[in-house]
Length: 126
Image 1: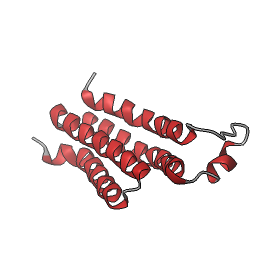
Image 2: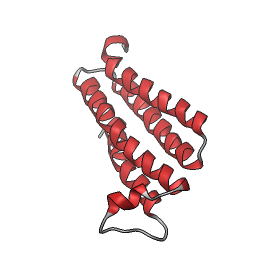
Image 3: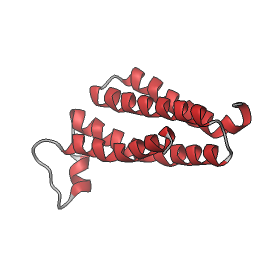
């Protein structure tokens, strides 16, 4: 299986990991989790926001990888860009939880541009 598809798997798992970070600790109300999530503060609130953003980023990334593979872009290019995306997203989540907003924004932009590069790679990669 190509590395890029492993990266899709990792990106798909990431929202659940971030939800786990948000839920780790006292006070979880699993009977009413959405209202409970609204009561979070500090790093747990930021982890929950990273959880939501991970879900938002996933469809474009997965579609970009699959489209690039279907259009026969070089697999090495797709793999490299997919690994860069996952690294940027892991860094993004860590920066979000750590409350380093500027770094978080830079990593978000890197991830977003990487998705565009993956999607357009059949046009420019040889």
